[in-house]
Amino acid sequence: MSGRPFMALRTAIVALALAASAASASAAENIAVTVKGMAFSPAKIEAHVGDTIEWTNGDFVTHTATATDKSWDVVVPAGKSGTLLLIKDGTVDYFCRFHPMMKGTITVAK
Image 1 (cartoon, helix red, strand yellow):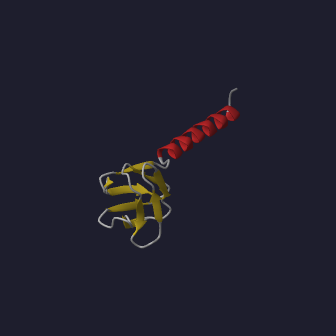
Image 2: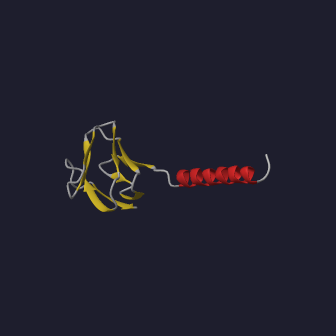
Image 3: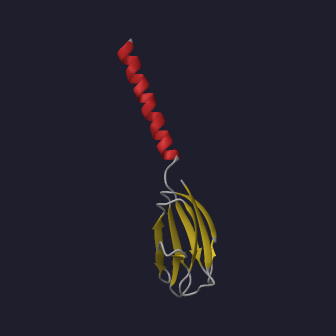
């Protein structure tokens, strides 16, 4: 191939490669939080809209991750995990409904 058709095809391929690279760079993340010893670790999380938080409970009792504004409530049974897809930016404090001294904060950017 030579000439204009080849250049147009080459430009299209380069554009697709750049778009794929940008998409993978902004891919959503899975952020792990351990629940152990009656605490969330890490207690402060920075994330982006589209990320997922996964709480894994290493304690022998059920916990929750409950937004103080009541916008979400994730039950995390003993020895199990629970997840939350972040769909809104902002900062949300959360706690365990069963053990209110357990607290955390999630700051979500766009």
